Amino acid sequence: MKKSKISTLKNGRQNHAAYTDEDHLVWRLLFDKQMEQLGNRASLHFMEGLKKTGFTRENIPHFEEVNRRLIKLTGWQVVAVEGIVEDREFFELLSERKFPATTWLRSQDQLEYLEEPDMFHDVFAHVPLLSNPAFADFLQQISRIALRYAGNEEAIELLSRVYWFTVEFGLIREKGQLRIYGAGILSSAGESTYCLGLDPMHFEFGVEQILNTGYCKSEFQDRYFIIDSFEKLFASTAEISELIDTMMSKRKIFAPEEMSKNGQDLVPSW
Ligand SMILES: [Fe+2]
Image 1: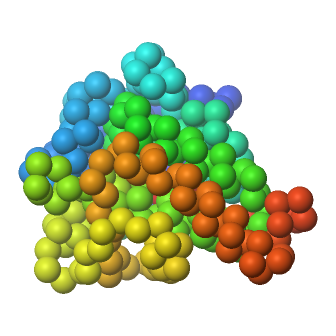
Image 2 (image 1 turned 180 degrees about the horizontal axis):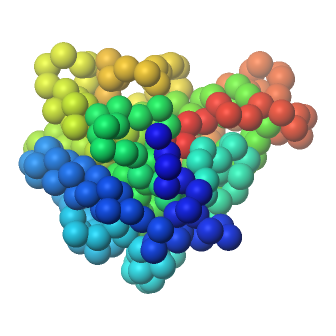
């Protein structure tokens, strides 16, 4: 039930005054739950980012205030959108260092499960890491690669795998400990404990392996990829670009200059 969806978005901007008492309560409940889960599980860069972006349990973030902070740190900003954004617009926004985020919050009876991302996912889980320069550069760089292949379903599917296993479901090794930086995990109470346990498979980050690995959107992941640092992740964009170019040229189809106007909705924005 997205009852606040319309009223919290007005003329393309967040309408903060429209949040209801239930919205404020839901933010606090989710914030408290995830802070309890993430204290010793989330990347230290994410925890630092939470402070830098000024997120607290008491207040649903004001996008304008968040942007004042983010722009100074990395030049990124959050832009309010109604829901999932189609591929081309999504990548265009990212390439301009703009992160699309919904403004509505789930209701109290949906704390555990959502069919599409709400503001808690888009903002709490995604925005703090935009304060990290190397991660922020990585996100912009993969969007630039995607734009070269906009409309090419196969290439966009490959990039969606990269996005999925890093931005959404990535793990990082920090001070010898496995930690979470993927937003899909950071906003999930269940997956934030499951992903570090013995049940799923853990692999070292590898571009070729990720490009050849499909994923499932409706269940916990059965595998995660571990990076050593965001600097190395950013450095991998050269290999990502090269490998996709090679894979596309071998197929001798969907070369960038032959892009169709179709092929939307393959990249998840959450
Ligand atoms: Fe996301």
